[in-house]
Amino acid sequence: MKLPGQDAIARQADEHLVTHRVKLPRQLVEHPIRQVAKRLSLALMVLVVTAFVVYADRGGYNDNADGSLDFLDAFYYATVTLSTTGYGDITPVSDAARLTNIFVITPLRVLFLIILVGTTLEALTERTREEWRLNRWRSTLRDHTVVVGFGTKGRSAIRTVCATGLRKEQVVVVDPSAKAVEAATADGYAGVIGDATRSEVLMRAEVQRARQIIIATQRDDTAVLVTLTARQINRGAKIVAAVREEENAPLLKQSGADAVITSASAAGRLLGLSVLSPAAGMVMEDLIQQGSGLDMVERPVIKAEVGKTPRELGDLVVSVVRGHRVLGYDDRDVGTLELTDRLITIVRASPGTQVAPDFRPLRS
Image (cartoon, rainbow, N blue to C red; front, side, top):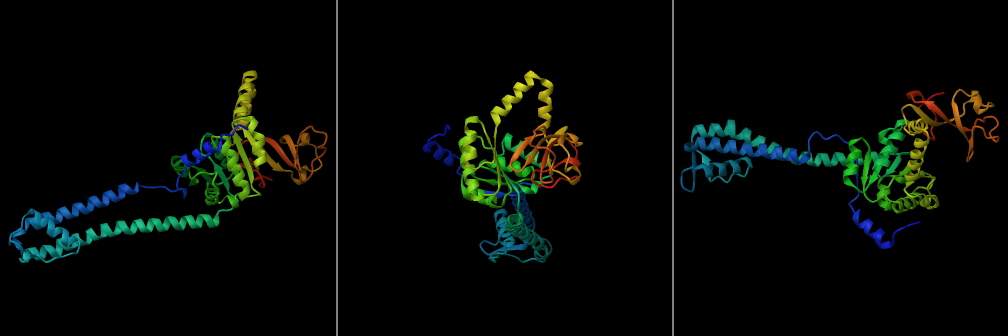
């Protein structure tokens, strides 16, 4: 396999060295910085209004320093009053000034404190709420699907598994790019920012409790390292990895991948098929687009089908999965169907025929 040297791998790790953290999907009404800026602007506006109110009635106030009140003194008085400091060097002496303090300055002081204290409390509450959501998410996450890499391949893989009935809450995306994880959370998936070759990053994605792991990284050497790490953490999960070069596929299988897809070769074969037969290419493209047109699904054999041959069934059977072998529909070893067999069939896509791999079908 064409793997770069240790220095290149170290450089790649340094490039993706980001503080790994979990981001759960959420809908923000407004950016937090804008919320704080608005509240600060409102607090400043309250301060300015208070200063003008004091300055307008400056004759009713006494300054212990010089006896008169100018515009700067008005702002100073507004500041110490709204912040409840109250040095007492400037005091209202007239009845009008005191009534203004009771009915105007005091409500403005309360409003000012609510704005400042409310902003702090909201920030603390949001942090506590996010921590609670994260702990609850970790405690309830079971048998989920981890997708490493939210590029073109990763997005297509997620759309395919979700088209079979998998809920978005059961998908966790791992990517070193913060923008990619933000895009994933915007689509409703949980995300972990970090280098998936590191075990602590995969542990944050709860890989140890995952049912399926999809590895769709941009580099083949990264896919190998991620596969090794994921297999070490979770011995029983189904791991499917994508590689660019076909010669690297055996190494991925040796690293622990159950299935390896060569993206470049698969695209090339589809191109060649489309040249030879455009109609056949369209059919193949339709088959690999789950949820529309024709779908290829795997389902168990029902009791009514036991003892029949694949040709006698109403569905278009392509292969029969018996034990660890995948047999063609016309293979002599198939004979008649058994209750423990699973069928790979081509069906017309509809909500009633969507079947997730390794799960019972939705139709009977």
